[in-house]
Amino acid sequence: MSDIPLNTNAIVLNHVSKHYPGVTALDDVSFSVTKGSVHAFLGPNGAGKSTAMKIITGLIPASAGSVEVSSKIGFLPENPPLYTNMTVIDYLSFVAKIQTLDSHKKVDLKEVIQKCGLKGMEKRMIGNLSKGYKQKVGIAQALVFSPEIIILDEPTVGLDPKAIAEIRDLILGLKDEHTILLSTHQLHEASLICNDVTIINKAKILKTGPLEEVQKSFQTAQVLKAIVKKWDDNIREKVLSFHSFEDIQIEKQGDVTELHLTSRSGEDLRSELLQVLVQSGASPLELSEVKLDLEDIFKKVTSEEIQS
Amino acid sequence: MRGILVLWSKELKDAFYGPFVYILTALFSATIGWLFFNYILASGNQSTTISLTNKVLAPTFGNMNFIFIFLAPLITMRLFSEEKKQSTLDLLFQSDLNNFQIIVAKFLSSLTISLFMLSMTIIFPIILALSGYADWGIVATSYAGIIFSLMCYLSVGLFASSLTENQIVAAVLGFCFLLGLMLLVITAQAVDNAILTDIFQYMSTPFHFENFIRGSVRSFSLVYFVSFIGFFFYLTHLSLDSRNW
Image (cartoon, rainbow over all chains, first blue to last red; front, side):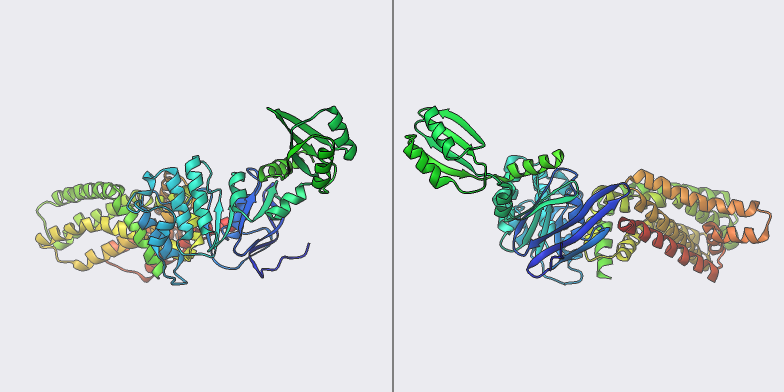
């Protein structure tokens, strides 16, 4: 595989490997994060996500390969680097100072506090804050010097649903001004906010690219959902004679029947199937294509790996 | 320089907003004050400058040096180990600060705390002056000697703190290093070889400190102190840099 140029990318990893004695944490990893995108970095625990993020931020060196970044990075590690004996404002002010020693960039602490939902918490001791607020302070420290790139390592881990929703809104608010790379186990959350996705397992990249493309690539067969008024063996035979579906799941829901039909190919069967259902007297009420969500892809990818 | 100042002031705020520095200072003041009081009593009615130097000043500073062997690792133990434990060391590494600035800022903050503790002993020369003591040169070199020794102890403690994320382990490690240095004097006396005796003596911090107490500032002692501190700064740098290995 040839090297990925930086060009329109904010982060580029080319053939990056990281070896520890007896363990390979990253094995020939290559992917890029497009400028202005929100890129999800997915993988089970121990897959190599945090290692890759630490290499990108320069905290640890790669054993092989190269990493290119277009500008300075704001980083929220898995364990937020918080001085628990400092107040929120003192902490953010300290981080702003040590992050702008070279650039002498002006920092607007009030704006960051406002953006991160920390208003009213400025004078509170960090050690006394809830986990959700600590996480927000962690994100605030990554934002405080207005970096173009922000890397968030599992920003929602261990938080309650309300805090998760707040962090999601916070990330959505950052979307327009920053390039964001985030790792998470909240696949549903990721699918709501990300444009691109990279899936890693056992130190290797399994899939990387725009979310839709990744979804398509795993969609080897078309799954159709149909709701019909009538369903019997006669209609079933007619449907099967049109296409020998790999699997048909039938669920009776009151007066109607819901069908999940898995085709044997990726080709679009919707219009033909609709005709067949109409002609066979099934009286279709609804027909749509079911797309794999991130959770399905994640399960599929990791289970394929386990099987292989 | 600005980076060092920013980190130095943050470290000092951390230290002086907590009770630990005040507890250590109280412990130090009480111990050394009690010793000083006893030396004054033991000196009897003779209050000549020479007798006060030999019977009060020299043993007081000697004990101060000994006490700091225990206190210095306690002052430095949290400097890096706490940062490692709270994962905040990565924040410093990722900032515009370099290893040298981090080490110097932390060293200077621990030195400032130690000087704050040492400032409690300013009362001793004042009390001596009331008894007619007049050899201020000895007082100045004694303070210079204790400050140089302290800097050595703090640089060792700083290095020990960079090795572990457990503060207690850092303190014990630092103390072991310093005790080893103390024991070199005894080894130097026990060895029946003039060259080895000189080498061991030169490597031992108390040997150089003793010269300062006697009022003699030797250039080789200054070289020793500077190279000692530089060597442990370098070891600390290597320890911090080991994440890249």
